Image (cartoon, rainbow, N blue to C red; front, side):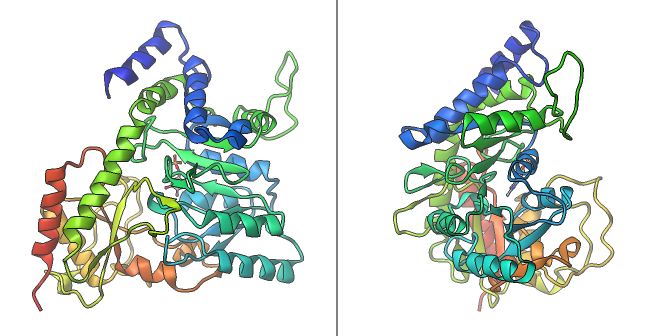
Length: 411
Ligand SMILES: *Cc1c(COP(=O)(O)O)cnc(C)c1O
C-alpha cells in the first residue's frame, strides 16, 4: 500500500468515519463515475454504488431487474462463478450461453437462439442477460445490446475483470442497464475486497442503496417491507479505492505493456498462441490477465505424469477452505500438456492457472439449461493464464517465456 491509500484511511480514522458510509465512499463513487463516464455526454446519468463485493453487485442488479424464484437469467458460461451464483441465491435459474472465438465472450448469435428457445419452451422471457468481459476482453457488446433491446431484456454487464476496458471508446460496464465492477485483491484495482454497481440513473442508484443497507423504510424505527442485504462498502475500503484511483491508469498501461511483451516474445514459439484482441479497431482490452493456448500436439516436459497426484488446496489462494478432491480427474479438464506446463512453471516459481472452467460443465449446474457451441469447453482444455499483475516486471516476462520454451520438448 502506498502513501495515497494510507492518507485516505488515516483521514477516515481521524474523522471517525469507520463505518460502511462516509466521505471516502462518496469520494470513491465520484472518482469511479468520472472514470467510467469520461467525456461521453450520454453517460452523464450513470451513477455508481460502492459495495462490499462484485458478487454483491451482481446480486443487487438481479434484484433490481425483478428476478424472482423460478425466473430464468441468461449468463455467459465461460466465466467465474460469481457471474451466475447470485442467480441461484434468488431461487432463479441460470441459462448458460457459450462464447465466440474472437473475444471468448458471449456469442450474440447463440444468445438470440437461447432467448427464442426459452420463450418457446417456458412462455416467459429471461429476466436479464449477463455478458462477461473475460480477462478484460471487451465482448461484442453492441450486438448483444441490440438483441437485448429487440426482446426488451435488461443487460447486466459483468465488467469485474474489465475495469478500464473500452469498446468503441466507451468503458465496459456502461452499455447495459447495470455494470458490475470488482475490487477484489487480484482485480485491476483493489480495495482489499469490494465492488461497485454502475447504474443508469440516480433513481436506480437509490434503489440499489436501499437494498444494500438492509432495506430500511423511513420511520424513526426499523421498519422493513422488503428483504435487504448488508452490502455497502466500508469507508476504510473506499479509502483504499480512492488511493488506487490515482494509479489506475498506470495499472492499465502496465497490463497492456506486459501483454505486448508476451505477444512479441511468444510470437515465434510454435504451438503456443497468445490470446489478443481482434484488430478491427473497436477493442481496447485492459488485459487484466494474459492468456495463451497450447496446441494439443505440443509436447511438454512431464506430460505423461500430469494429473498423477492430487493438488493441495485449490486455485485462488483458497487453500484450507476447499473440500478434498475425490478423484484426480473430472470429465472436463485441461489437456495433459497444459497441466504439465502449469506444473513445470510452478517448479520455476511461476504461478500460472487454467482458464475458468465453463459453468455448464460444473457439477453444481448439471441441471441448468445451456446453449453451447463447444468454444468455451475447447478453450478450457487448451488455455492457461500467465502472470500479468502490477508486480510483473519486464525481466519476469522474459524469464517466464524462457521457462515456457524450456518446458517444450523438441519434435
Ligand atoms: C471477480 C469476479 C466477480 C466477483 O467479484 P468479487 O468482488 O470477488 O465478489 C464477478 N465476476 C467475475 C467474472 C469475476 O472475475
